[in-house]
Image 1 (cartoon, helix red, strand yellow):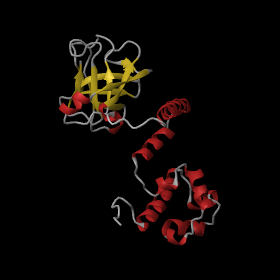
Image 2: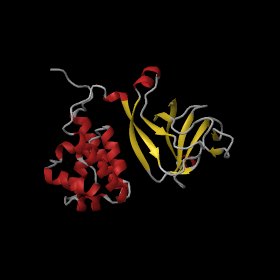
Image 3: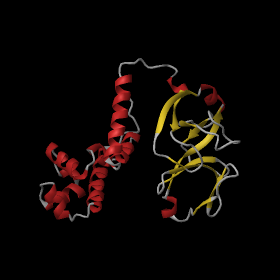
Image 4: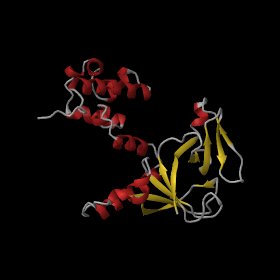
Length: 253
C-alpha cells in the first residue's frame, strides 16, 4: 500500500495540536489556570496536554470543550492546512449579514449542482464579477452580479492561471477598456508594469490601475483622469489598507 507523503505523523499531529492550543490561549489572554478552568480540567492536566499530549488522554468531551472555547475544529488545531480551512477562518471574521449572504449563495449553488453530472468542459468557464452602479476608476464597490463566461480560447493562449473575470460596464476607462470588455484576472500579486485591481479597505472604492514597483509603490491611472496613489511598501499599516484583488492577464472583447 502506498503512503501519502502529505499525511502528518502522529508526533506532528500531537505537537501541532498542543502548540496551537497554547497559541489560542495567549490570543485570548488567558492564564493557563483560567484556560484549564474553562476546559473543565485541572491545571496539571492542561500542562500535560500542552507538553506531552500523548499522556493527556484527550476524550471526545474534552475535544468538544476545546472546540467550543477556541472556535476551531480539531482538524484545524492539528495543522491540516486545506484551503477550505483558511476560507472558514476568513468567513468567521465577517459580519453576520455577510455570512448570511455567503451561506445563501453556497446553499443555492449546492442545490442547483448536487445532482448535476460533472461537465467535462467545466474548467473552460470562470465566474465573472459584474459591478453594479456607475463603473469608473475609484467606484464604490457595494454590490455586484455574477455571470459565467467561457474562457477556453484564452486559457490555451495564456501561460498564467485565470482565477476569475471582471466585466467593464461603462466607457469611463476608455480608450484602454470599453463597455462590454471582460478582464481575465489572476489572483497573483501584480508585478512592475502590470494592471491590477485594488480595493481600498477604508473607502471600499475599487481602482483599476497600473502598478509601478517604486518606493513608495505607485498605482497610476490607466487613463488621463485621476491622480497617482502612493503606497509605502515598507509600512505594513499602509499596505494593509488595500486589498490586491488580482492582476489583469488579458481582455476578452
